[in-house]
Length: 111
Image (cartoon, rainbow, N blue to C red; front, side):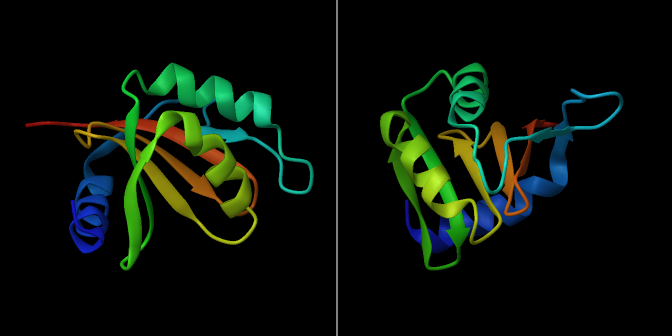
C-alpha cells in the first residue's frame, strides 16, 4: 500500500477508535522518554498485534508496512522525535505513540 493511502487511512480511522483504559481511568501507558522501557513496548506490541505485518504511520510521505520483528527498533528510534501510530494490516487495532513517552492502545469501531 502506498504511503499516502496508509496515512489517509490512519487519519480517517483514528476518529473511530475506542481506547482501552489501563491506569485509573486513563488510556495512556508510560513507556519512558529519556529511558525508554523496551520491555514494556514489546509487551504492549505482542498483546495488541497477532499478525507479523504491521503499518507504521509517521507522516504523509513516510508511512509503510513493517514486520513485527522490526517494529521495536523503529519505535525506539522514532519515539523521542515525533508522534506516530502503528496499525495491524487490516486497520482494526492501533497503538498511538506520543513523543512525550506515552502510548495508548485501541480498536476501530466497525459499523
